[in-house]
Image (cartoon, one colour):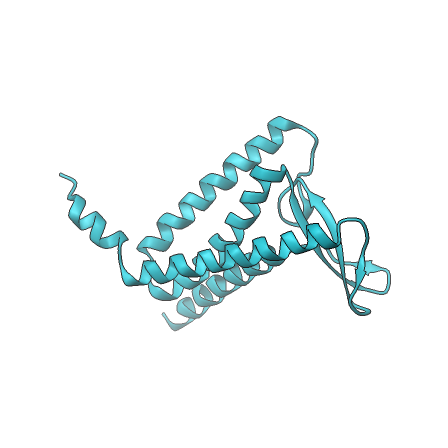
Length: 165
């Protein structure tokens, strides 16, 4: 039989509380940066230096603009898949060790920020344009940075742990 007290004790922990704080901080930071860009730079690019511009681009696809389409079916299918991935990551973060909780919190915080935009704006505002002369990398946002950082931390930990064994 399912012991609800045991499940509750596994979910409501100090570590998971810290995980939630990190997720909320990342979500808030992402929202703040996107609101500032939307309100102040929506019409034109802003030159930072010879390598970085702020240039608002609305991304209807997933990371790096992949799968952009005007199809509502594709957009809604991708959004549903993203929601399931976020729920999956939340579950794994709850049962993970402290170190993995950190990487999962970075990924979930960024993913929920981008998912929020998908639901509210039907697109994700990307605005960081890295470039060198005429070569421009994909335009991205703060959430994308934190998702990438979380994935890198998770992969490095997995690589180091497998090397130790």
